[in-house]
Length: 475
Ligand code: NAD
Image (tube, rainbow, N blue to C red; front, side, top):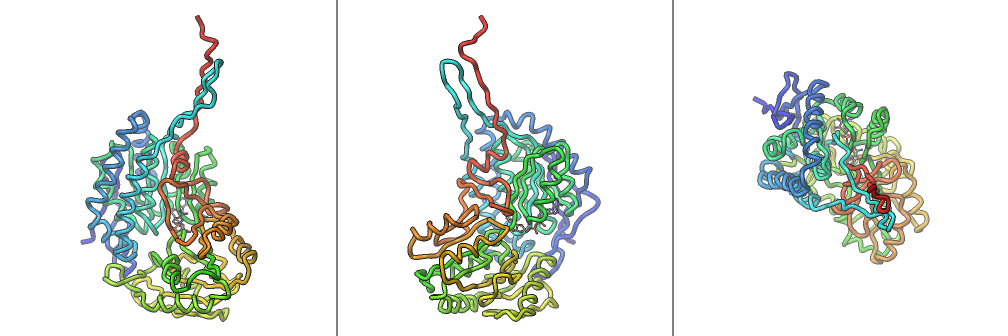
């Protein structure tokens, strides 16, 4: 009998008659069923969030923090169960799933320390003017399937901290771990403050257009982000969009191939490449191209692709069939165009489980689909460049602007290049590091607004200016 999971609405775990199957991408077996919510359940969740908002917005910050810390504690205490469940629905190897679960607990705790202080605009003999931040109200959160727990936490925590209440929708592909967390926190958070619901993609537009939701915070594809912006425009909902990326890594001629090969590999292949901030195009200076590409290929040959639940697996399956088909299509396109493969190149869609072998392309042209599009899979194109100006132009030649990296022995030069990249985040000599205290957001079509840090927290608030005239006190 397949385990049936419930949704969290108004402090209660509820079910529906219609259920959705959830599949393990490692073997395509059904491992759980979740409620298929529609308008009725969404209305109940929104009504609960609206009712809770009345008191939650006035709840002292310390109490709100304590509730967040209770969530963080529940995740940490149950990490062992949660990371195994996460691997079974998402596919990522145990070690990486552990990283996501402990990371979610740590980030909740760190973010709970943030505070938006009042700002004094004017303190003169004539008046005192002060800006305070007030919560926007009921938030609709929508998350994808690549980091389901981290993304959910990234929405729930700042919403709670700012005094908002939230209705969060998981991805239909990866709802299980988030619903288990919902069960663990149901009695730790006041009823209605956090509501977690599941359903098909059609539940998304219902949230976006719901008249009693004040703000949408969304992580997912740029295509869906555009639909959300459109849907939210009817009543001018506030929106935060964390979208796709086609991040470039630039390796300068002074970088040591032996030192960077392994890091470059994981900057592309973590979570089977299904990371918004994965290195999706790697530009290597021609002086070290041959040596570095050989070192990356050599490292790749030692990494095992397989079921994330098995010890020793470094790269798990693609999370779902649709994404698997897309990645296979990109590899087939590269083959049809005669691009050279350094590693891999063969795909076998016939077996069970959505496995794509590690694939590394050798200097495909700039207009190849694998270079121009976000692959979101274990396929890495390596390209040669000869001058700094040229590589900066090629890196910036994208509708996306999420993140990027520069690898060099000269950190100052690294910063000089970083400052010329048109992305929200740039690393020099590292990758994927995000801080809960620094804003994370995309430029261009990679997003709208930011998460994390005070800037991210502000997105859940309106500024309110209160001005008191000092020299006009009625007698
Ligand atoms: P997606 O856009 O297909 O789906 C994301 C979520 O939106 C899901 O919960 C889905 O059910 C919901 N949804 C689908 N259609 C909707 C609609 N019309 N209105 C409202 N909601 C709708 O994305 P995905 O395939 O789940 O995730 C992969 C994408 O997410 C990649 O492009 C990746 O780069 C991006 N991503 C970005 C970040 C970031 O922080 N910038 C992080 C992770 C993933």
